Length: 224
Length: 274
Image 1 (tube, rainbow over the protein chains, first blue to last red):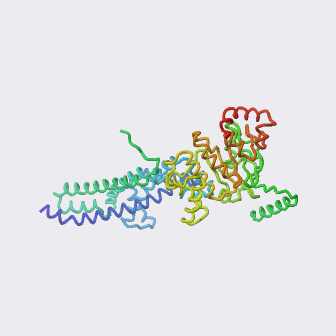
Image 2 (cartoon, rainbow over the protein chains, first blue to last red):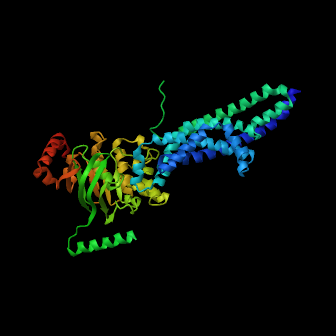
């Protein structure tokens, strides 16, 4: 009986998985683009802008994600901004991730020798071109290990979107639990396993990407 | 408005030059440059001029502001006071387009500063593509030409970390050359190289003599003596003396120049003279 319910419920778990993956994809894109802009601004924009970015980062890194979700989903309608649960979750995840990613990129920018931008300037590049063609390509390569970390955190944190009613993996699991409480352990173990596999394969893939785009001479060699 | 002004000034100047029947063709004019880092004055009023395709070598003890002077010329660190004119346009004027001016001024760095994420040929073609807006294929072709010129065609697809110091520096020179500059500034281009590799770089530089103006900061006295049209001796943020290599090495007016050249000649001079 329980097994039947479980098998019947599997398709809904897959639906949930789809939503989880979509959530992850949209918010990592948002977080990455914003993060790159923020880090570039923090390092190269004028002082007032850099300072505003600093405040943004501090605020977003200081608020629990669930609180952020509630603010966006339940709070914003108060001032006339109505977003559906999925969009709210994407924005919440993306904004928070952008703040963390900005830190990762800033660390990478700081490790690029100053001579690189001087060389770009001396070819006649303006600041924007130098950042785009010389700094950002190197920054991204140096950021892959940190970014992988952030990606897996974001992937797992999509489960918090459960809290504002996004019907993702976690919420589908909850539905199954409600239908047949005896399945609770099996269902959540299954969800845990799915997340584990996702994170594991993401890490493997990203490790491959990291190796592929490594700058010659900047390999991290391991001496055991 | 301003641009029209300088152009006008430019033609007027040229007229004066022609009327005096002197083919001076002053290309670079450095006027009374001052620069401090914090409270420490580095340059205390440096002036000199360069003609088209001329080779000038700046020598002098460390910490004298030689490198700073080069960086003041292409505005990597803008001077506190003074003017720099290139082809009758004032670079130091805040209204002039510094990026456009820098296209005309190549810079070869002591520590190479090749773009680490790009291979040799992309290092050379990046400026062509992104600054000169030359399409990718043509830029690649031009970059390969420049690499051939510095003898590194075979290393085109290698990354900076896979090149020796001397090769890196030659890529650096190719990168500067590709932009068709009027002037190339060399900031101690061989100081980071071991003696065996220095020769390759100096040979490339020698081959450029008379084809492009070069302003070279170096400690290679043999090179200075053989290649320079004029040697500038700097110390303590000012130009102590300048003149042709012959004058400077055999008949320096200032005691300090003699002393410096004597000491450094005893160290490097003999072995460098080939």
